[in-house]
Image (cartoon, one colour):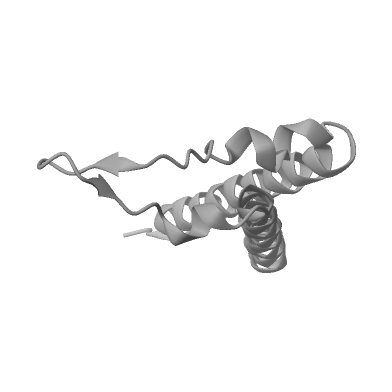
Length: 121
């Protein structure tokens, strides 16, 4: 019984999966680059940051609840924007690290299995 077709299917399947991983990683890197250098407003923190509204709340008995202590800070809204920008930058770095890791692992796996699959044919 000749089971060489199982080996071929395995090699081509692993090659396909690793190629898909490389494509996804390439798209992620391209997306990060486009947002960083061409479409700079796409990652603007003011777009993502929620509007901060500081209002006094009325208790059910009619008394006024104290305001949020952060609302008395005149720079509260600016601090919120800066924190959001820091979070977005950290997320971009995390996305880039994931994409690079996918490329570092996916490329050799694809190359090795594709080379063996072509040799088997």
